[in-house]
Image (cartoon, rainbow, N blue to C red):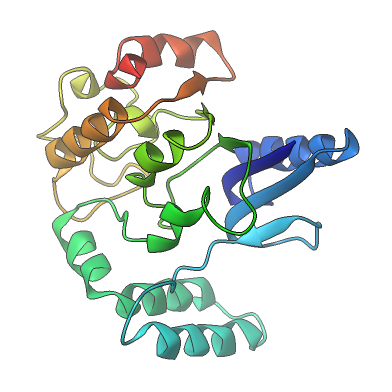
Length: 228
């Protein structure tokens, strides 16, 4: 079976470790497995970085070349932020959305993950936040192949944050966010718009949702995600 997983990184925190461990297990069981990430941090076979410059003109090639040069420099403070800036400069809509507080879904390559030369039989998504994946692609991809989405936090059901803590606004549509700095932080309060956009995406998608805890599944069952 061809299994494609999607995760922000192949090495970082607990969610990334789960995805990488599963990737290794799938391969050990004889599956043709790949792990699609924002940035590749290991030399693990089958790990592929999603190209943030695909189908972006006219600045895509220029910014991609600049990012490769920056990545080749010895590590320095702010290197990652500089690479992120180049990715946003490549597509002005990314800068506009960031300034408005709208979550960045402007990654065209996401839409081709189930229709390229290597077509998966199953897509297993993990964290999809981190400015690398177009959440709107879920509707298109899930119409072609089965999609499992393992939620490792509450971002999928909020207007921006991964953990709403005591805030209950995610249950009814967000808006008037009490803490825009809560990760993933946003510059302005577009939480109601972000929430509504996610709800519309899920209404058009076919998703099997899993969580690592009963607590998180309880949040899912009280959210707009459960309707999928």
